[in-house]
Image (tube, rainbow, N blue to C red; front, side, top):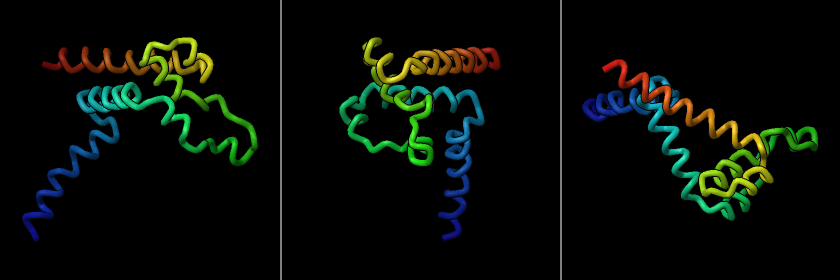
Length: 112
């Protein structure tokens, strides 16, 4: 049992680092995984999910971020017009994520 808890302790730190974006190497991997999942998941599945908007639940109004996930999925599939219909902010969000990836890649290679 002691060996098992020691193994979990060794495993816990990298998982925590990946989930908290602690290092550029992990941030690159995490963002690429998210972008791949958005590319792979059908938009019809995303449309079938319930609305989790807190603004809509409390205020009855949709906030500016509604549709960014579906918009980014559309962009990754090459459908710019559909992405704009979902939420035009998906374009700058995708650009910012790509900039993060390139910045982190530059940072990782500069460190070596």
